Image (tube, rainbow over all chains, first blue to last red; front, top):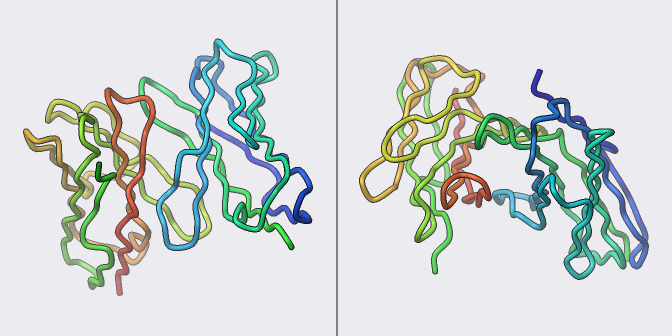
Length: 111
Length: 111
């Protein structure tokens, strides 16, 4: 079935430390994996995405890795800042353009 | 360039009523997807519109219907509202379907 599992559900880090969020998808046909950041009272904001023909992608302090064999993908945030505090969602694309989302990770960065 | 806009921002209805939510996509985007996000959960795909046709549908009852206009804007209609329909309704637009950008959402409360 269509399923995306996301861990951990909450993550607390000290400012300057790294944060890692992991997701697993079920359908090997999925080929597109976006990550969204959602702040309180706002809609999800796309922060980075990766396609299945690429193993890793980096954008400044944010990176995403993809292991197609294991059907795992992860978000890495380095040098975390208080403004990184938010809920992060991973997603996988199924059947053309339907996104299936994980359950979210609440990240708290303490100064 | 304006992003995805949605109206209204908040809405209160009673059980059994009907509601219409509206979405204007980003400039140049021709595909609109609708998602329902319950409190503390990830967005759930409702359906997607492209060229004024429903292209794909998630696991939602027929009470949920939509429309896309020639200018690519879209409406989501929900009939016979239930308490469980209370949620944040998100619209996402994309240039052809893949990379989806979300609006701020409409928060619906059903009493």
